[in-house]
Length: 299
Image 1 (cartoon, rainbow, N blue to C red):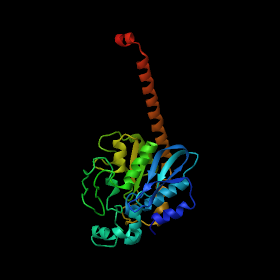
Image 2 (image 1 turned 135 degrees about the vertical axis):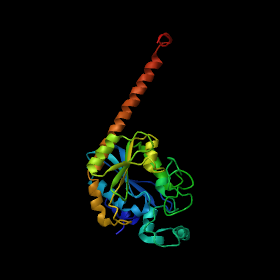
Image 3 (image 1 turned 180 degrees about the horizontal axis):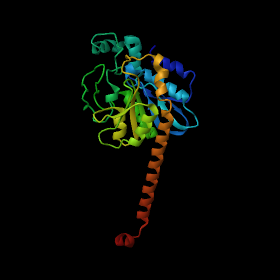
């Protein structure tokens, strides 16, 4: 049982507070949900890699279980709907005009169970503007995985995530992937909030390791641009095979059951600190502007 775009559409029938943040290559909507009090300062998303679409089901489970009295979180379950449909339905999940191209890229195979890319054979998690094209595994031609695309944010899915992040100004973000049962944090030598990493590692029981060699991922872009705290959570034991069945959704979601409220607290805390810093800076500028010329010359 594979969770894909058709399953998400079915879930929408019994959900509320969702909206589209954009469309995929094949014009499928990319949906976001907001739950909690106030404006969301934190983001949880999944399904950016096609074969890891079980993470979309996990995000929906986290959304359903999140307490509305807590600070708001934005949930984006399925960033790559086209890729998920390819994994689930093979070429029947693609637009007719793209099927021959996709089959050729997939080594003339109709088995898309290991496909990671979107409907244009671009790996979305190397398409963000953070050392674009400098990852060790990056390739520069359409491929089932690791193709960076023509330029940063060349894909409508990554551009939608960029615009969503900038619109809300998220201060904390968690990207869900499979597999390996660990947490990746950090980007180069930029601030990575190790105290927050330790909090989430303790809550999940997952070891946290640095990913200084990564490039082009959402986490990398988020940290590079100074939005705040961001991690990647790899869920599921390495013995599992892609694509992981929905039968494991409850088990994977259980690992993260306390993480959303921690992430919401982190996002709100960083937002408050940035707000206080901005107010303090504004007050200092006003003080300087009101100083008399003689006062400025004598200081």
